[in-house]
Structures are given as C-alpha cells and as structure tokens.
Length: 238
Image (cartoon, rainbow, N blue to C red; front, side, top):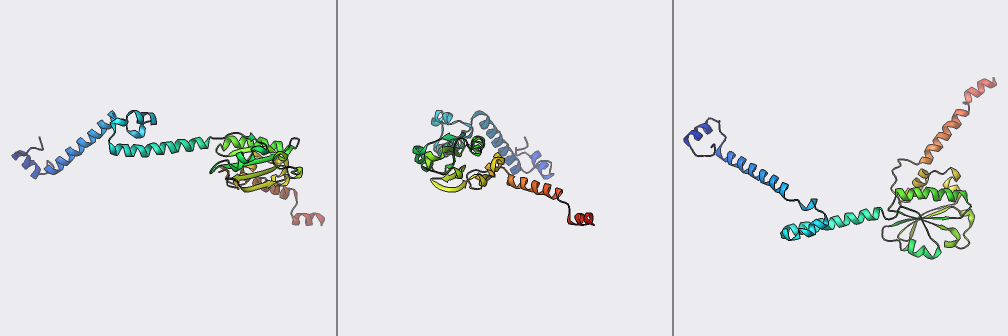
C-alpha cells in the first residue's frame, strides 16, 4: 500500500517513484468524492429533472435547503408554463361587433397586442387582408388578431377608408393604416403586411428587410433596362 508509513515507501518517495503522501491522500479523497457523486446521481433523480407532480410526491424526502431551492424552481417552471401558454393563446382571427370592442380591445389584458381589421363585404382588398391576417394569426399566436365590419364598430365609417387596421396595446392605439393606398392595392403580399404590422411593434418578424423595397428595386431595374442610355439615344439620332 503506497499510503502506508513504511521504510520502503519512504525510500521510494525520496527517489520520486512514489508521490508525497499528502498528494496521495488528496488524490484518494478526490477519487472517493467523485465516485460518491456519480453513485448519488445514478440513484437519485434531481429536482431539476422532476415534473411538478414528482416534486410534490417526493416533498417529504427533501431537507430545508432543498425545499427553498425546489420552491424557486417550481415558481420558475410555473412562469415558463404560463409564458408558453401566452405564446399560444390565440392563433386565429376572431370576428367581433361593436358591443365586443371594450372587452376584446380595451380590456384585452396586460402586454397583449391587438390587431383590428375594419372591413366590409364586397371589397376585394379587405378580403385579401382577412386572408393574410389568418396566416399571420397562426404564425404569431401571442398576438390577438380580430376583425369587424366597419360600421358595427364605428357608425357611418366611410368605405373609402377601407381597409383599415388599428394596432393596440393595453387599449392605446400604437399604429393605424387607413385606406387602400397605404396597403399598395391588390398586390399586397402577406410578407408586406407582416412587415407593416411589425413596424408598430406588435409582432417580431423574421423578415430582414421590407419586401416592398425588393419589389420597388426590381421594378426600377426593369425600367432602367427598358430605357436606353442618353448616349445611345443621341448616337441613334445622329
């Protein structure tokens, strides 16, 4: 045994064949602690790996320090579950009328963004926006997308202002988009609508730039390609 105090071991230590006794003891102690930790981990399921139900079942087995840590962990898990539920709270476009406005918009809840589309049947751009909003509602499930026939929310609201989109946060209007020109007419894509709404802060888009800008750049490139350069035009006239 290299840990024993024998004359032979002393000779070996002096010659550097055996390490100093203190180092051997430290190595042995560290090895034992490591083995114990591995054994404990293999036998006992830590509270981080437990579900809330398992924590309640094993509550009697924890000491006071464990209980404090577990309570903090339980609160963290509950907060995470609540956040996950909030992220998937909506997911579709709801139809409301004027009498629902206060409940659905003003009292929507703390931190809840509301996107309201005022529309009318028979207006093609309104139908297109309703279609795009349906896709956006599925993508951004933590945002409340709603629609309403314009005159049920605002009596005598002029058709020339349709489509209209209001963006609210906790009852306050954060953005408004009124009339067909704002939306670019029937060429409006879902990405363009997503970008427009994202500028209000209601949604966090994964689009890197305004899709409308790409179309405009392509259009300008096409125009330049069709229009001859001034030098070429002058040479043809000669």
